[in-house]
Length: 385
Image (cartoon, rainbow, N blue to C red; front, side, top):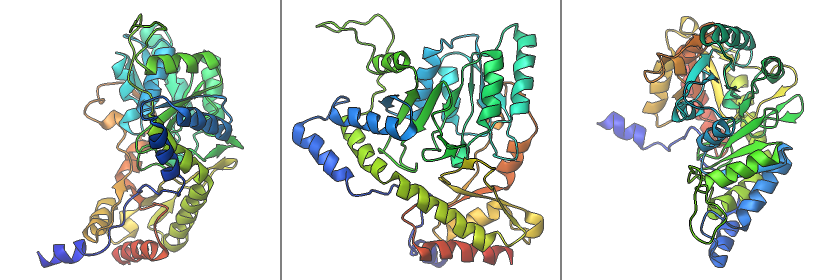
């Protein structure tokens, strides 16, 4: 009991906590003052316009989550029962759960080591093999910019165009990242953003669907508001969803978006601090940015070699941090290894399984002080030296 008490008495360091910029409360108060509390209102329009300007995508629908955005994109592409969708395996389940909502089959593509994202070689092999197995091509491809690191989008897009398969670009973790100067979320047929509480900016919970096609986003807004027809009574000809973002949440998002560049620079500075202080030790490996790619470094991730760290593997270090009231987290467990998805097809080398085994997300919140960062570094180095 004394050990637990001593650990819990130390200040908590969170993995990635929300960080308000100051203007959010003004926008929220404005929503209260004008009684725009429902999922309609001026903040939603203003937030969508600001997101469009930042991402260079003119048509944006602000929604209740990134998962909702993926679900609507699949609906708009006509994905249904019996179809297949190519999904990155190394991701959060919200990327591929909507495939099952539609009764479709996820086909998982493993990672390549340069970005930890979808392997274009395995993607091409999977498309050709699925055509032989099923007699038709998959209906969509969902690459992910994991931890803010852009995927190899040009190769993926070239393959997608060759086979005429639409791309849903999951940039939920990558707002503020760029691929050869282009904002992540602007490259696919659809772009997906998330504003969950742990993301680089937050609306407490929320997301967005982006597209260069106005008709798709218009239809997404229609479906997201229960597919209500233009009539004085409630008239419905299609199944709809309660997926629209509230005006209050959009107000928070407006304030957050105003400080996004500051948040990106701070996350990148946190990554550099960890890389400089831990990277000199041979036990630790950090993911560099390939040429032309700029990551927002939403979370700083590190691979730990237990053979070079006195046996201190990812889990031992995670538990040691937890004992000191410091939150960290293993890298995502690949979807093809999850019990709910393990019966579905998987293509590629076992890169993601190795990343899950050896990888750890270090605390990366922009509210962390220099003392917080040093506290994490000192503990981790103590474990391996």
